[in-house]
Length: 334
Image 1 (cartoon, rainbow, N blue to C red):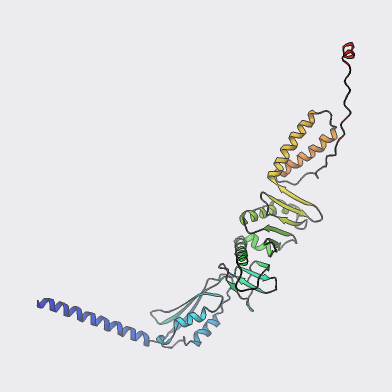
Image 2 (cartoon, rainbow, N blue to C red):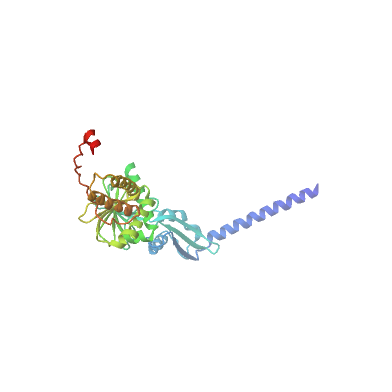
């Protein structure tokens, strides 16, 4: 019985000692002074819109300085104050074992700059959060013009439009060629997008924000296969919004459509008709030659090449008068 009493007494003394040590440690920590302050800003790789001096100013205003009693520094309130900055996504403050105050800030990364129809401007990040401009810095990001609304609280259509802007900006920034070549994206009243390049004064139409990978792949292929051979100044409009084709309009010329599937169908139809005409002696040779030119043009379009000749219009030919049948009696005499 007495062994049990001793055991309980020892455990009770141990618990009291532990609590005493904890209370003493807490009191010592609360009475300890801040030994230093460190600020860490993460999240922005190219643009830093959160000024370190501004963060230090807020810390000083709330008494978070070297030598201050740690228990008197309201970390939660400082975090709340820092989060009022639109460029700060998240702020965490904590003391380490050496009583150093760490301020870790996650900055928002600008993704695109938006100009509204009324002339106001703002940045957005990957969460479509609106970010104010900076007097000291300017981010090199895709610029979108003619956004329809200046309201901070957007309607559902405008919110969806802003999501499309974000998706287009992400595709452009993910591609080094597009980032270097695309200077501006204009939003049309129909919700389509028209791109202005850095080199050249052409208009690049991509339609809506669907199938962006396919559209930009066609645009890059056009640059590599066609534009590199003919130069930057020959085309007025490049349209990649249609399936399986690129519509290219030369300056002062009608629209030229480079459609591989359509060209193959035209080539097959022309070859079949040419073969039929070659068997028909009622048609003149110039007509066959004219159709042959069209067939060669279709072959080159099917192989993604430039037409070797302008399409030739086939004029309606007048068939020669039918030969009157001779009477059977005359045929027998002959």
